Length: 313
Image (cartoon, rainbow, N blue to C red; front, side, top):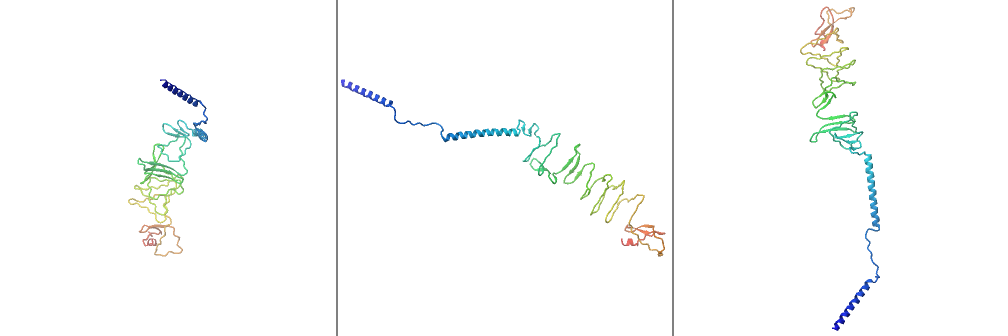
């Protein structure tokens, strides 16, 4: 029993010594240098990050300044932009506006106190299309001409809507009360003209002329040619025909003169003497073909069907 007690005391003493030794070893200063591991971004990475943050800040400030400048220059408001205003009736433009692409609108109207001007460096074209997108009408205003392509073209008066001019594939109608032609060469017609009245301006001459062909005037109830204060002249190169199919040709005047008629020969039984007076009175004769000529007047009729005028006509 005493031996076992001694053993326990020795073990307890060894355990105490080991504890004290271990404690002293832990309390002794360590001779090795400790290693530190820094947390974060340092060095050139940190400088690059600050540079990018600064660049982003400068870009945001420039963008904000440019946005404010554009809003101020373009005059952006709640109702629109610049000369453009959005109203309940549509879009309103004030001043001069330029369109670089096609413009599709239903109606273009100017203010009451100002005209509407459409201007282009080349031409101005207005197109009309149907529901299928097919071109039904086109109006082109160019430097050389104004062209309209449509089934029917009409020009109406501002008051009453009277048709002043209309044109289609079949006919052209002029609905004005008076058509005035002021050109020096007059009006040239390639085909027939149907009109109830043709007159010249006061103190001006009226000329109906066909340079290379014939001039025909026809009317179902007659043609009336009247020159109230001047002369009436009918001139032609070859033949002038006055024809009445069912009636007569009536010439009513104080004096009727037929100039430049040929003089026919008269064969008398006695040869005229050289001392006979000069013939001053003639008789108007007609050949069987209707040609007129003059024949020296005598005691009786001197018209002969065998006259040289009738034989050579």
